[in-house]
Image (tube, rainbow, N blue to C red; front, side):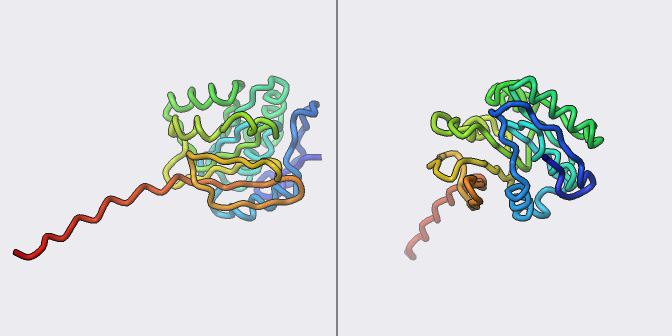
Length: 196
């Protein structure tokens, strides 16, 4: 059973996607995630990438996010997300994009969309071949001061050069990695002229 843990939709039961390819985030991990985020969710624009059932974006909306976009390339999963949004009464604050992740991000960037929180839950093997943070950086869809949360298997040695790793939390087989923008290099200190 998938349910909304807290907020205005607390207790709502969400439909699962009938496919072994979709791994809903367990309640224990989802609780840990939102306990870390706390007030960072309220009034934010959220992107739920590789959204599956949409449970993470819906949890964010339940806890006060201003709006959420869900990216999902599997048509059955996209239909489940729409059903879950309707069930919670959250459809007016959400948009479901049925598209491959990179193409969806490019499209959102063209619309000048910016997000304060980006959740990514790609298939475990995806990170062995691709870096989903690259297109986020190249297209500039993370708002200044924003945060990216990536779920991956604890044995996956994922590295990215596009964002700075701020924190990691591991629970069971899952690790949540938190990324922020790379710190801008400080301008060189001008040389002090020597007295004449």
